[in-house]
Length: 156
Image (tube, rainbow, N blue to C red; front, side, top):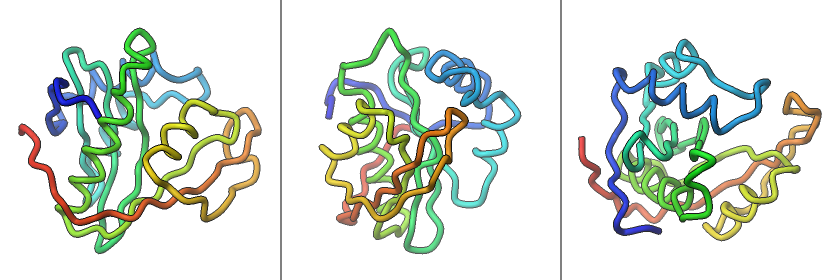
């Protein structure tokens, strides 16, 4: 985790910046536009964490009852390999725990070695597979992360 990275909770007015970053971070078939990002932020229990100026990365998640899920995690291609993804995952995990979640679920493409390494380093466990889940035909690996309940306060 990067201690020097400015983190704050995303607001609805950040949706345009988040959609622009998502477009830079994902291939065309997997990009979320302004409408999708706005809808995700409006879902019950949803929250986003932004990292750095611009931003350099963000994660969208939601916590309902005692479970949370990562909806998407995006890091600007020019800012990758700087521990931004790990920092965002830790921040979202802490926020989900603060909101009462005991575990966090997410899906990752079997073909995405970098993301799989990130999630493995965070301590996730494989709990399932979704066949041909992604636009490119790759399977999704379903992961679970146990949360320790230590909530982190983020700048609002």
